Image (cartoon, rainbow, N blue to C red):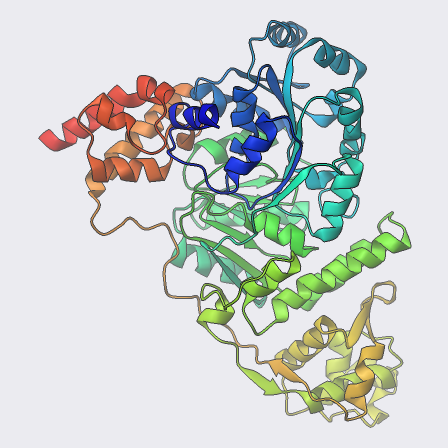
Length: 598
């Protein structure tokens, strides 16, 4: 570990490991296998980068998105690490050059997409080279029960078969117990040490609210809290991503759409701009985000309900990788649930798969509807415990008001039953409120005992009742019956007067007044901060890399506090390794000295 600590200090510019990084790195250096679950921003990459540098040979990283390899390799090269990649973007001459460098032992890290790794040519190449380790990033992709399943990952068990002496590390930020078990089985990691570092991201504020006017809610959120910040807005459909991106541009933001239907070169351009420019908002489907290594994403917003808690956690985890405060903000409604369940019903999965997906959607909806601490529920889903409420989610900051909804719930269930369990929520509300619509009259539902019994509640209140009954398992949505609501067996105790039910009282919530936009400490020299940022931006443009690859915000803030006057003092800053000291030290010292003399 002396060698590992030396690499951490001199190459990466950090003083000490974060537990359990040291244990993981020690395991790999000694030739053991590891399964690592660590939250986004927790330092997973160092767990394979440092052993790859410490062990003889080249570390091979299996990464699911070729679009990100260039940025990952550029970041390593900036540190003086001999890194490269093999993917379909390279021409034949470039491929041959990288392959020869590997055979000549001139590479420390090589990034390869899974579909390329399993080709006979690649396996033959690797068999002739000295391999330090195999790192399987985003390992949850191997699980057919996971939320980002990739068929190419199923063949990665061959690494154990073809290279039994080479240590392997599988890494992910999101995997429940079932997914972890499948990762172990499919990658043949039964003998691997497991490192579960916890899932909590305390710097992220989780906020979920009822969808009422999604665009205006989003606009208010952005203008009041993130007027110039980088962020991601997730939508369910490709069409919606383009519409929202265009609309945000009209509102004065710089917003770019991203979805799988866009041309490859457009997606690559939008991703590159997001990584390298400041203040860009990407409006995307779930096609965007895996492996995104941008530390200063200040918010992730969802305009539609994610399908699973895993997807929600993974997507929100792209905010605040630098450890600074960030927002995970979402609006949702019953129509989201109906749409997702229709998508599940029409999927190609077998019945067992659909049942698991239904269970996961119910868990996601349950997270939305709870009145207790969201973080405790979120962590509990992954088997991680938080003893006390977090104090940094909406239900902690603004405790939810509840009301005795027992009688209203019985009316709603009765209306669904007496209309034959063949109608959606809007028709049932019309029946309960006594609205003599054409459909109510045509179906003779104005003669039912439940007609007009719910006039004391308005449409929004009844919609809230039905949504919560679905979330709590009293009603289900029949996706084949155009969203008809049907009774679940769970409702019997409530109908028999054996149970009472308290529901959350939905109101249009005000945006939390406390700013979560990254704020500078009160005692920092803002003029120097801006000058250092300008220097970083200029260097990043020259190198064609994102600004954070030069130095992250924490290192810039330390420059403002420490005011280094020499290369020796500059080299002692956190995040400044030998390579970056030689490459950038003089430029930043010049900016500091100019500021002091102005």
